[in-house]
Amino acid sequence: MQDMTPFQLLGGAGVVRWLTDRFYDIMDSDPSVKALRDMHPADLTESRDKLYMFLSGWLGGPSLYIEKYGHPRLRARHMPFPVDSVARDQWMSCMSRAIADLVVEEALKEKLLEAFFNTADFMRNQQE
Image (cartoon, rainbow, N blue to C red; front, side, top):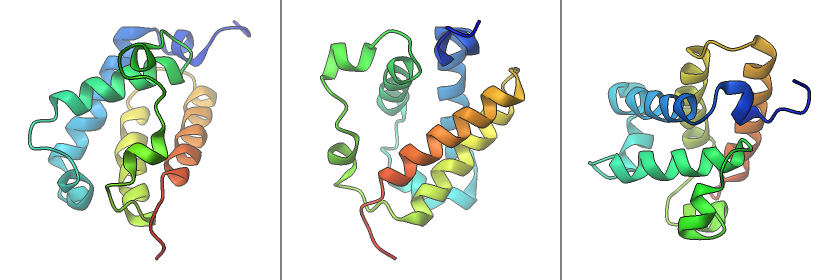
């Protein structure tokens, strides 16, 4: 168990897909994150697919995103969007709620939240 990746500990591709869809379902339905939602296209299909592929590799599973698009270059790909602490916090709100719904150990949830926050915080490209 100790050598298992987060991808494996979560339960694999199906759970990562579920987490991705839950994240976007929350973002799409919660008016408190409207600013974040407005940064995305009306049709979230491609956004869902890209996040799923990215998370698959980021969590230690298949490197689907890299295989299709190359290196993620997260900051560069997010530069066209004004990512400030409000956007970061809205993104984290959606992801935190999605993670809370996972049926996994609390320690894994905490590690995921910390890693997601560090990554989301790194995406900031606007000063308040």
